[in-house]
Image (cartoon, rainbow, N blue to C red; front, side):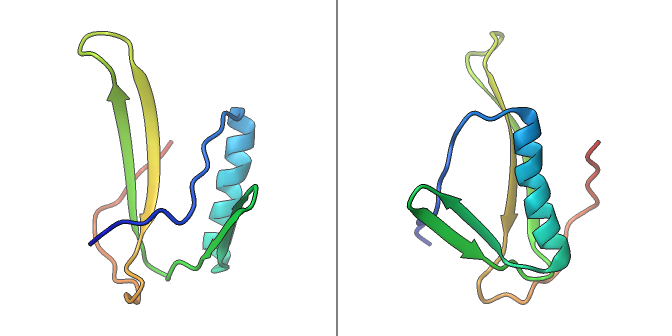
Length: 94
């Protein structure tokens, strides 16, 4: 299935500012509200179902044995036609 990017934003922010963005997403998820993302003239609203696939990935890019670039990626994924079936194991974040 071809992939189409509906929204993309990449900027440097303080840890505190990022926490505020993530908190806003968490609040919307918890309350069942749609999530609207805006940056410049871009905007997209998504309304995740009650159950979604949650993927957490930590990556290191760079040459083996040398300092590189680390990333933490959080992804919510659902089928637009899916009502939100559950699956997977428990995740702990601390």
